[in-house]
Image 1 (tube, helix red, strand yellow):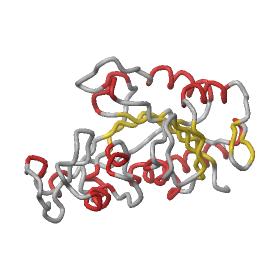
Image 2 (cartoon, rainbow, N blue to C red):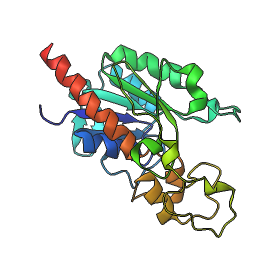
Image 3 (cartoon, one colour):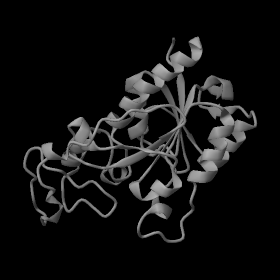
Length: 232
């Protein structure tokens, strides 16, 4: 099977995309914000509107031409998480409308979000940086409409979280590095990149990113699922 194409919705700067690419997919990203460091084909658009138009058979505008619905084998979506966070606030809750459109596609899909979104997700699988030898825990939930297996957390292999330390502070080897929306307490971007397994993002982009190791694991299993569908 040649490299299948995956549609990466709410793509951010491409943490998830790189993992899928490493697993064997070609990836097209869609995000409402400009993503100058996104490493693959990219369309700037409202992801929900884009998905709805795509469902109705519209051709996807691409720099080198266009792509049709039939050109994609699977979809990944990371709807914005602030509305599901403990802080909440007046933010849109997009998991449900995204899922409705994904189900209509008939394609294998992945929906990613934060642990606080668990009630909005269907039997999600949790991935943790400790399972991949990363210096972050960064628990993230993944809902799929196909079987997904996940390694257990390995928190015991990580050293204590230094986020209570005041900057300037250099975390010891293997210590957890806080890479989150509230700020990185003065940690250099190089330290945060190393902790996440990402070498191309800015500090602000890292805060919202998924470590590529997560989607490399998911992508490998997704390819097995796609091959099984082809031979069924």
